Length: 291
Image 1 (cartoon, rainbow, N blue to C red):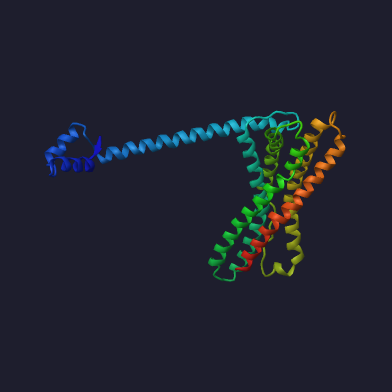
Image 2 (cartoon, rainbow, N blue to C red; image 1 turned 180 degrees about the horizontal axis):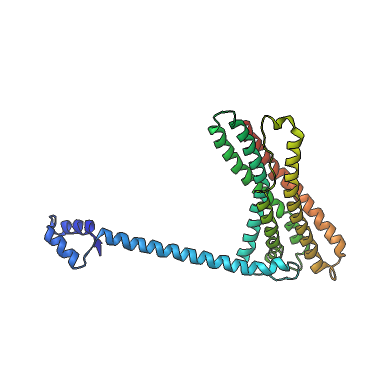
């Protein structure tokens, strides 16, 4: 079945002339031509059905993820074998993004507060607001990368020290399992980043700079406590993953293996600082210098 335009083009090609109105009407009655309105309605119905299908699948996957993640959050150290590689990486992504957001959001709110204080003097800050928005997104993206690489710093040591007992995939899954409770901790931090106090900067408040710094210090202390609490969870994860195989077996005592694991993690963090973090901060500084 063709559209009216397609049928007319085909008719002209076959008969070497344009169809008459009666011939077009006859083609429509015989079902050879689809009216544009009907075609549009059919397309609209198909799009609606596709949208409903996508929504249903997304809802089902969200429900499956919640069913999967609840027991891991409740008992992360007792569930040894965890399946679902996609959900494991989803938890890692959530933990990295929410951790980065909780930190960068406080900075964003502080810069917006400072910008609003200048706008009270009647200065047109449209261009600066646009630049600040780009800077905020850049800051969030960089911090998310930093969180992700720092979170994976323990993995090389675990793979090396437990290579005789677990395959690479098993070890990665066992470590990523701990990002399920970590994602919950970082979500709490992301929520708190909206409610922690941000000083209102004005001409009068600038006379008391110490109060402004104290307010910022309090805000970052709250967020910092959440992030450190999450980091402590990953430290505990390393201890559990080392003790799981080295506590009652292996050539070396689990205590020495655990110290070696922490040493490898520190070395990896130092390498990440030099290779990843410093270049990102330099790039961010250059962006600030271009203002």
